[in-house]
Length: 139
Length: 137
Image 1 (cartoon, rainbow over the protein chains, first blue to last red):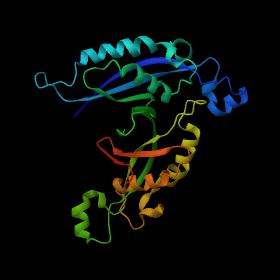
Image 2 (image 1 turned 135 degrees about the vertical axis):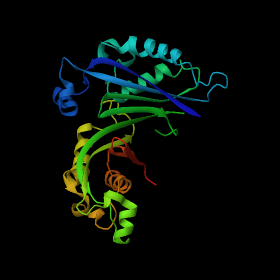
Image 3 (image 1 turned 90 degrees about the vertical axis):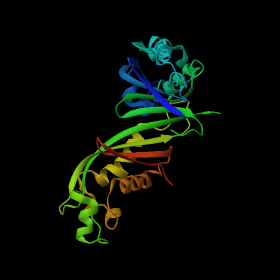
Image 4 (image 1 turned 120 degrees about the horizontal axis):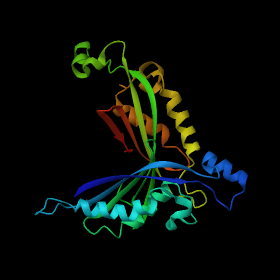
């Protein structure tokens, strides 16, 4: 099995707020991420696909096809958007790195037909990232 | 098969070490460790990357509160190693050679008791060309 990783970057804004909590609790749990008008990040997404290289082409998958999937499913949905208000899949969830990574996994997994989605890693900054992968497949 | 979510976080500290063991002669130390055995030690800017996993709390969207994770790592690792000589200042390296392999293991042992998430892996980058990982035995 060979792993192949493609990286894209997008910029988006978000805020952390749970309406079930009081303003004070929101402040305590989320800190300045609770600021009401939100803030933004340059997100870096690494998508790793696992598979066997095709004996004819030597490729696990057509990278252009993967690029198109990432453009359609992630860039068009999230780039230059306010994640809380404009991304339907995140409605009702706190748009943390963990939750966004899982949503991206769920968007990509059915669309990747050459090879198998192995890992989604989403960096919110150089020092913070979330991984999503299948239970038992390791990170 | 369900999905697993992990959280990765990077920290930095600067420390010095000397790779040298009393179990070898001076010649053997010099042969095995090269300039890393120079008597007064030398330092690195270490980059520590830790990975934890766990259930995402639906109320917060988080595996673990970052402020709690940061303060745990600060207390268990950064305060212990940052701007220290590992050989002189860190109890674990009084007898053990402070290679980055052993440093990974020591940091893993210090962090595995984090109560809010499961420690999956520790990666320590000693220079941009060297990094080491430990995920427990």
